[in-house]
Image 1 (cartoon, helix red, strand yellow):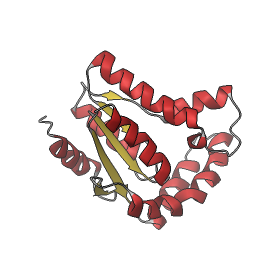
Image 2: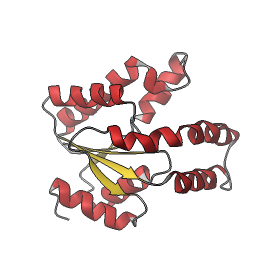
Image 3: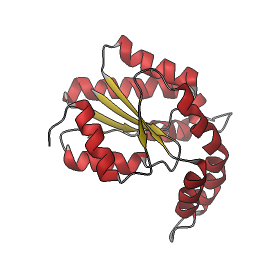
Image 4: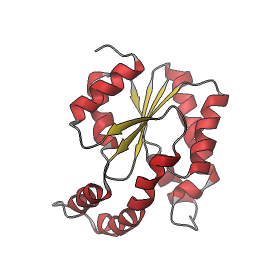
Length: 179
């Protein structure tokens, strides 16, 4: 099984997955962003968004399926994926492989997301790369918030302003994990 935690940048996906993993240590944490960063080291990305690379979408699915097959453990994936065509392509590939995907979307108001993203960019020790990424992320917040309305049937929407521990309780209950 794959537990995909989706939502805007700054919604709390990584934090929620860390909480889930602390309670469910048998699960593997797989961040598809790492595949995108690897591809960015190899090929030029003409749009500035590695999700536009068809190879990224294929490889993220391939690696997730490989993890499931090789290790026979559930996979926790924190990843913003909001383009309806890409959502359909990725989740369709998992369905074609007969893999259960529990898709959660953290809903957070744009004003809260902008504040959270701003706090990350201004954090002590933030690099110049973080500052450059900040503008890119802020430019996408509205699109990510609006994407909640385009998520596929079966998506479980969570209030991303609730405490992470409560969200983790909800996710684990939904997927049927007793901890």
